[in-house]
Length: 196
Image (cartoon, rainbow, N blue to C red; front, side, top):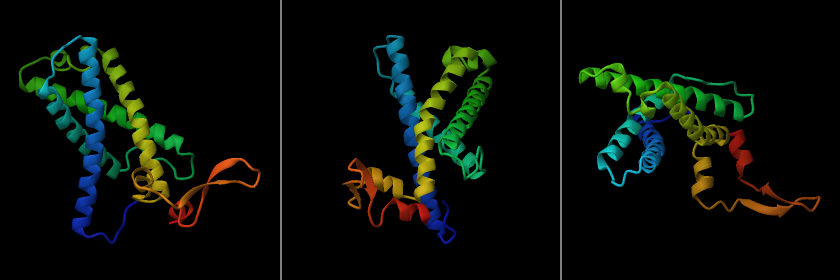
């Protein structure tokens, strides 16, 4: 949700915050994949360089994601259940990031005089099935990210983060009229955020 009255400083802060959140999310994903690879290959050493490269890759891919989002890449209609834009964006962005990563690896490899297959050797073992499996993993791990983003846009900027990371005394557990327990919205709650 964009706010037209933001100053340049506020916009820069907001964009930097978005880049850092996406970078952190992707970096955690990449580190988990590196650890998984180390366990599968029974490597017993900790490569600081690979984690540093994962952070650089996460930062570069976060910028790609933000640019694509600003260009309304894979945007969906507003009057649909959130599952549709969540899955569509997860699929579209996983393919976009996979293509970007392949192009990046090939460009670096060609610069160093390697062939196409040598350049992509580290991506899923250099096979298309390996690359497709990594893209599928990326699709799955992007689902919670886009679910959170879509829900956040629906209820209002910053409100979802407040619900997850701050105390929320306006939400109470109460008994409904039929006697079954349920979460009921009290004054100043999500209904105000959804209509804002």
